Length: 126
Length: 133
Figure (tube, rainbow over the protein chains, first blue to last red):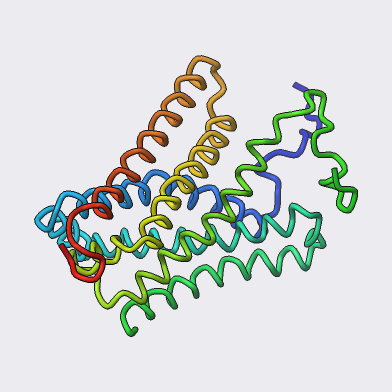
């Protein structure tokens, strides 16, 4: 085959924060569908089943791996919430200028982490 | 149809004149999630602890019970739209796509039904709102 330039493809794009935000929005959203929703049903189901089942749930939830899952779910939610709000802004046609777009892409990722930290700090100290 | 934004000018003007419902529903349920999951997060922070007695007593009050039931409906609805979008992007074989969409639909509707049932069972069980059952 003659070596002609290929149409732009995934390997030639220079990485930018907006790509990370887009990928994380999908990963956190679909991740929550597969992890957070079963945990939500387990929590509600154990609550409906009675104190013994609820003790099983909270026993698992308070182990180190349970806490990893719960903190992970909370981060996924706050990250998805921030990038989702960014989507709402972009839905109306705002925030496409390169510097603005980069700035808010970085900001949504950081705000997601800060909100997760604030949530757990509030759970522990309030 | 609005004429303020580019989005408002083109909505519904595709060759099919329809098909934007899923896109709009994703936004409606997103706002719902913001309110309802926000309610749950603040409640978890404000509840004195997450023991069985505390949480089941809390869930006997009308506002938490209704909010959590709406939350279950809303998050599973939003998840169905998001998962369907992922399937639309990555599953190209028509038969596999149909099977995957069917599975997602059944699983999310089933999840909604179980979630609402669990909440009703706790909310409507004997005992008063003030004291745990």
